Length: 242
Ligand code: UDP
Image (cartoon, rainbow, N blue to C red; front, side, top):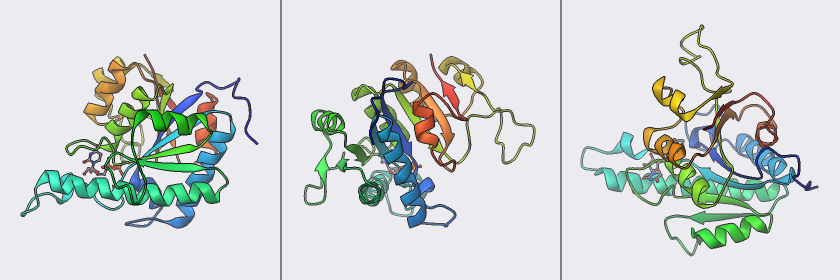
């Protein structure tokens, strides 16, 4: 059941789901039980009463910067990366529908026989009609990442926050997998994250978030219900906010 949303910290959110989050513990591609679990979390997030848009990455299939070279130019490699995000988006759309919510994929790279092309007004219309909007193709341009796509769409769609779902439960002083003394931040400003050189997102994405004064909530997607908790302003997360 969809709730009224009156008690939420954020009423319209952009959730960034990396391609890697969709592969679970597999080395490549999609792990269906993991895709289904993330879809259930997104449906639960929508049921809080918040409007939910999702930007999907493609790193579980292909990253342009990694495969460029040896005769494959970067722009073409990035086009391939954007196609990878579209594959993930279609999988996530179907998993969201199977979990009980209407969903629409909108792609920044037009492919009209497969899904709608991204445009701001239709995206806003779908959100207002309680559909989960899955955004594919990043920014639609090479040399960018889906992190930048996430912040860009969050800004233009008037989202209250970017929810960055990762494999760790926040931003740390150092990589917690490598440094046992690494400490987690509960709260940071954009300026503090920059001054401490903390890698919250890639530089272009982070600069845009700072400029647009968009909060970034970093939390672990491996924790069931984490997206809904973050929307309520609860749960274990780092909040980067002005
Ligand atoms: N990509 C791009 N422009 C964009 C977004 C993505 O060219 O605006 C390409 C780029 O090659 C990137 C790939 O798509 O490596 C997959 O996106 P990303 O690496 O951001 O995925 P994630 O790390 O979130 O899985």
